[in-house]
Image 1 (tube, helix red, strand yellow):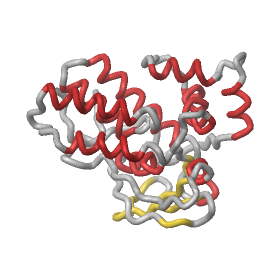
Image 2: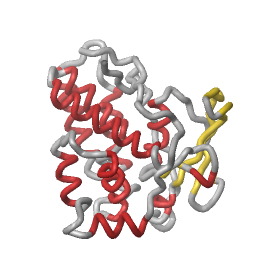
Image 3: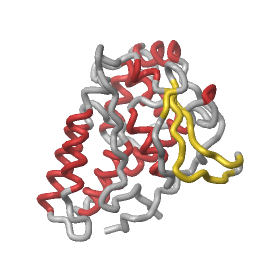
Image 4: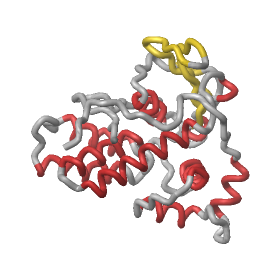
Amino acid sequence: MKKLLLLLLLALPLAGAAKIPDEEDIIRHTLDSESPFYYPNLMMRYQAGDNTLTEEEYHYLYYGYAYQENYKPFAAAADMERALATAAAIDFNDPSRESLEQLITAVHDAQRFDPFSPKLLNLLAYAYGALGDGRNEQRNFNRMNAILATIEESGEGLKEGNAWHILMFGHALDLLAAHGRYPGKARIVSRSVEYIPLLEPVRTEQGRIKGYYFDYSRIYRNKPDGYVFERPRTWQFNNLRPRKYK
């Protein structure tokens, strides 16, 4: 079994050239059955573990999900908590086959509403790897990397005007966790953007960074009346960290 405690190293930095999602463009391409980005076809390839999906296809796949019937960002919470509770009960030093199989089942249930959760993909990579299923381990690792890269390409995250675009609250925390950056308490800065400060500022090529901005507009426009926002947990529990592969 590969070591679990090392941080994931992404090919992309935490800031770079932005590919801001264009809503009209995404709707037009993902709803057109003649388009190479027709959503049912992209999702079928993603679920099959197709490793030929390009960066552009992941862009339409991730942001196009906001216009699918299953996109219910608040319905995913209960299944997500069950998946995390199942993971928290595992002895990561000596997991049993039964506990790993239960984890896989719980994660797949949570993916019905959040198929792109980096933390869920990370848990699947871990569980399949611990079971000796290298094919599914690598498949989920690749998908996790691609989703995190897609989010990073949507902006720079350093200002309100170039925030990273997120489909679920947890995706923001997972992106920071993947880079070993620990979030403080988020605060709303506009009707569509929140700022997440870091507990410890970091020095990068962009200078000293105290926090990052995330665009949650897709979540807000799906908010049920009277709903009170609750923050999800990151994947940093029981020493399980994002995977690092050679």
